[in-house]
Length: 96
Length: 493
Ligand SMILES: [Zn+2]
Image (cartoon, rainbow over the protein chains, first blue to last red):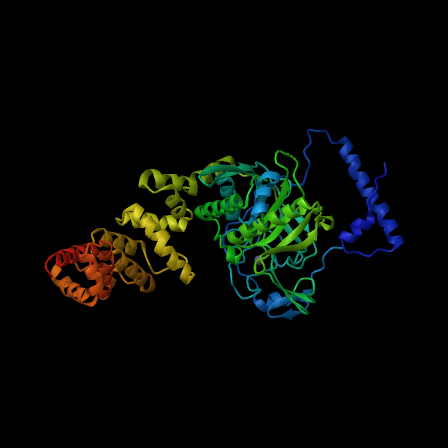
């Protein structure tokens, strides 16, 4: 059973500009993934809880103990640009 | 305004829900060992984890989980036996990862309540959920105008990125700005008592968004919901809600449709302005955070935390009334914060009469703190100062005018009240010999009032006593001065 997906919407959310050819290709590929999930949903019985994590572990925590941070210089080494000791980045773009 | 108020009462009902964000006062951040500290130089408390460098893994801070469970327990929530973190994806540069780790459909605490008191009536506000997330960095908008819309670039300080942040979401159970104010005040006091946050709204460690809508009374359906952001004081919340209530009221009366939108509170102008319409709402594409294991708090751990809960403000208010004889109003003021309650109890322990101590705290002391923009903890005045003051006043060693002077001086210098009383000569002069000279002078300098008193005008005595007080610099015992004046003037003179 093919599953439809709004590729343009997904592309907009990911800030991707896709050509029409790309849109068509991703529509097919993403559709296949959703179709697979749909198949799984069909065989999953009600007594099977949804899995968010494949490994059955919980409560992996750390004590509230300080660890060294990076030096300011090291931290800023990955900044595209710097001003006033801060990361200078493109202005905030509101979603259209 | 009065007309609108009447219409408001009869035609529409206000429905308010609050979403409050609380920065936890842990030593380190939520998912890494960087310091959780306010006011450090930009980008000094950052590491590969909180900067979102590839290949790094977050590990939750146990203390932050503990604090969140305590908040949930204090608010009567159920602690979820299984909860997980989600990624909230968005294109804002305040998170270097392009997503924020938060909780979505499986929060840590669900379904509690907080009781508030307004005008002597208790009102229960439901708590939908309490969840844990990470705070974002701080953005300075640079370029053309400095405003978000016109900014050409953004400057990011990531010291705050990754600080543990708890969100407390209330049910839409409040019906007035007064109730919302009482809720935020009570929540703040509760968090402060728990010792889980600095709750400094001016520093952003407690922040609040309000959802407000109007509907016809009796209607179960909610009206168009407006979200107000940028409320960084209890006063802002109160003013913004009053403004918004009025704005929506007028629009509905004119038959203008309201749109679901986010509005920003402008503290300077005292208005809300249009932010973002809901039709452009972000699609955050939440999905389970694969790098973090689920939280499944052991029931025994939860009970241990429950046993550690301190006395909460509501219980404290009751105790101050029942055991220390404060009025409901006094108890409300003194028990409103853990800081004030501690100071008050220490003053009482030091021997002060509870009611007198409460009066001085909520009167002169509160005024001094307001004038100097100080917190009680940071002030030089101590519970011992206040206890001494109350005692000297009670023993009539000083007058209440003298006590005011002594408190102000102790507040300013931290000197003991005894020392201040001596240094400033505030000891009440009660012996007739010392007062006698001053009384003679006052009689001499005020022949007309003296004459009036002799002719039977009793009220003038107060004026003459005032003159004696003035001459003595507040040191005269007014009762003794009045007696001496009466004695002296009823004689032959
Ligand atoms: Zn870090």
